[in-house]
Length: 111
Image 1 (tube, rainbow, N blue to C red):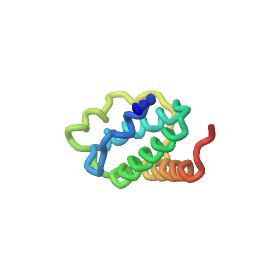
Image 2 (image 1 turned 90 degrees about the horizontal axis):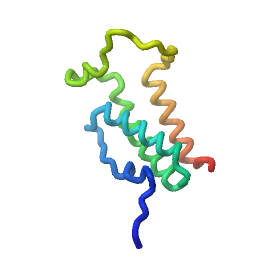
Image 3 (image 1 turned 135 degrees about the vertical axis):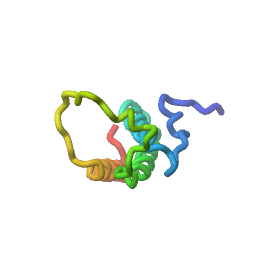
Image 4 (image 1 turned 90 degrees about the vertical axis):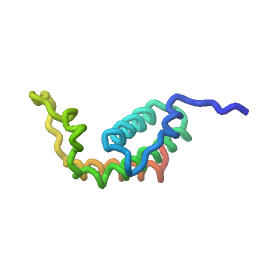
């Protein structure tokens, strides 16, 4: 029987570890969350939720680490963008996201 790949199922095999660069982990988190929101498959949603939780757990201890010199240019701008101010702090925001993924994992996702 052939395996049917659904949109986003490739994200289930994306390798990451504690050695993965924080920018990659953040990008994976974004892709996991976006694909989870767009999916109608409950099994895929739960699998993506588990991957999101794992990536956030790896990202959390690195939030206060300095930005590596080779990535610094990506985070420097000459003019700040006009955007609403939302400053909960990276640790609080990551803790909130981790708690949310844990709650969703235990209770499932609504249809």
